[in-house]
Length: 97
Image (cartoon, rainbow, N blue to C red; front, top):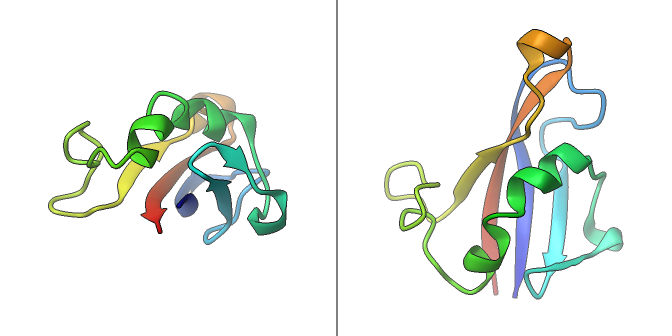
């Protein structure tokens, strides 16, 4: 089992990510550099409260991270682009067997 964290939207100008970049977490918590495009610490900080629950099969809707009936969870990085001039990145987290 693994978690795939994919960049789905960028507000502003992110110096790290492009739409479609992904981070792969094997077994739900091991960062796989071979299947990961790039990693920004802001995005990891946003995922920290949720990755264990999602990896263990807790539904995204149960923890308030889904869009409608979606099985994917949605989070965003911590960069407030309006203030910093950077980019706020929206991420989709999927659980894959």
